Length: 74
Image (cartoon, rainbow, N blue to C red):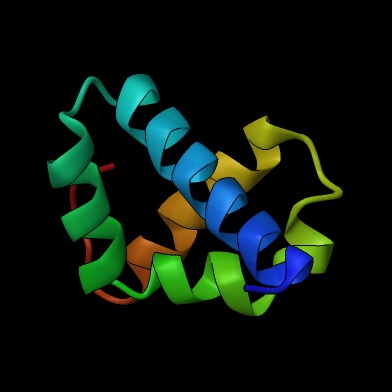
C-alpha cells in the first residue's frame, strides 16, 4: 500500500472516531451514518484539503455533508 493510501485510511478512521466521540455514538453507528450519507467519500475525496483544516471545521463539514443528503442525526 502506498503512504498516501495509508494516510487517507488513518485520517478517515480518526475523523470517524472524532465524529462518534463528539456525538456520543458507538464507532460502528457513526461509520454507518457517515457512509450512508456520503461523508466517508467526502473525507477521502478531499483528503488533502480536509486534513489541513482544524478538526472542529471538519466535523462541521461532515455533519453538513450528511444533512445535505437527508441525514438527521446532527
